[in-house]
Image 1: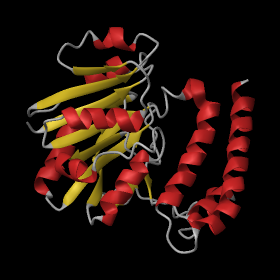
Image 2 (image 1 turned 45 degrees about the horizontal axis):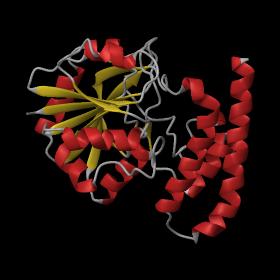
Image 3 (image 1 turned 135 degrees about the vertical axis):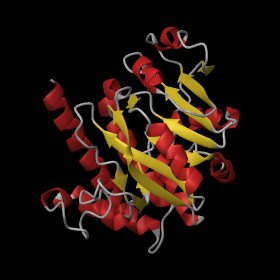
Length: 282
């Protein structure tokens, strides 16, 4: 089998049907859906698609562990990690698969992600470091978006029109050779929600595997649809997962020295984000 499509759902009733209906691929493929104990109508909607392989978890095991369940079940040469709040443009999957077929030196490839209104998402980043995170907290990269020194992490200056070798694309839609996923042991389940994709890409990078960005393949992405009701709580989780990632992959000075500076700044930045979110959602 050429392709396994792996989708993790959690309260995804508003999005999962358009997502599944948009999937099309010219070769042999399977769709594996792992539902993390949705409390809405997600499972009832999934029943409309008897062709999918469904894992129904009785509790929310987190994104990383649920994906690992899907990877363990997958039979395809390639695995497409796909968020349920995506809609795939015609031919997008075929383009990604063809790219890996014709570029054996590439381990993974990501499409161009677009918001539903057709505006581009900033989906390509470099790996975060202590310095680049500090710069981001200062908000200077937003003021000077073309400065490569200040904005190296978020890469607001990235050219989304041109194919490129990249460090870390968002895993909302990411095609990976399954042999590479198996070699890496899948996702690190110590990152249940956030930064598991960054960690995966970094471990691939350390082993010398390359990841490509292919703008001719396009996918619409609502970005965070299933987690929006828990937004304020998950903002803190996001910042703490970033701290955990930096600790795991620390180089240079002892991490405890960096933590003295970094941890309070991340907590303050998270609190500001929560207050801003509360203001705009009140």
